[in-house]
Length: 471
Image 1: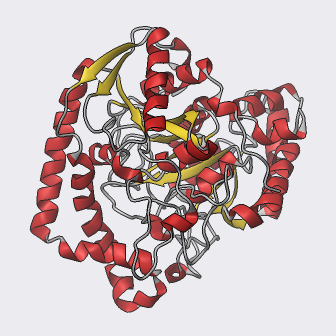
Image 2 (image 1 turned 180 degrees about the horizontal axis):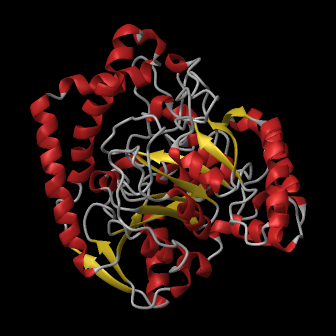
């Protein structure tokens, strides 16, 4: 493999090459560390990199591959962790001054599961402070730049996760998603990002933003890689009160089935309204047409109420975030950045009655969406309705909250319901920036969502494009 091939190879390709003896784990991790060293001064994706530990684990992984010919596909694969995820003996700061010096006493469940599958944690990734923000900016740790254009945002809150995978720093990263924080950076960075069903992946050892809305999931270069990551991540965890005991199968098992028999829902309202950028709308509609041409059946869905989902979700997120931060905010308000402090304090205006009503409305909304989807396997929409804004446009000031506020309009709908939702690239638009398409399925049916995304990838090359080097 050439140096560039190694840098941007998928987990699937790397696992095959490792198994065949064409490459070594040392080569993979050294390339990863090299790219991080060359690019991170400009992208600011990482907060910590554990180089010595990574090289030590690489040697262990290589021995495992040589001894166990049936090693896991994740063996020897470098993975970046959003800095909400606990790793024993390492700091978890959530990108905030408030948690400087906070050292994790044990691994998060997902870290245990990934390392048991052979993956190698590389370091902690930058994020919006406490994951509370959509543009990806952080005045404390510094902003993460988009690898496709370093003057533009990655979206958030999993900003470092999106940038690190898109730039070829790591083949995979962990993100969290409360209102779109996996799928928005995936869309703007031109990669795949899956928000699994609520409860499918354990949140134990992952800091809360909004405990009834938080999801943890993979961000990778391909849909198949998301499926491989899910095979390691998913499953019941007694340590997470919200964890589901729903059976977990092999998330790669349906990938090769294509579009035969698949029914895709096309919402008539909201997701394709006039406020959506025309290039984004046309790219997604073009992708839907391509899927129809290759065997999918398209079903128009009538749901003039579906825009309520985002608003209902915020009525849950805001008071839960306030409850999470109440103690620290009372004792150390000045240690929060101005932007995040104001977002948390927005929860003050939502009463207990309002919160209960929002949760009640959430049950109604989820029921209505489930009924709407009875005739389809998934809904297909744009991920983000607007072109990628610049960092300058999104930077808040004392008199201006900054732009980019429309980015979570679509993704947040499916945090309210908790359904699995995947973003994949489906084109390029203004400023030659990636456009994301969102595929949302039935609860605990990630396999169908991944199948649809993978089938689309086989017809296009959007996921194979690479940002220009910024070294």
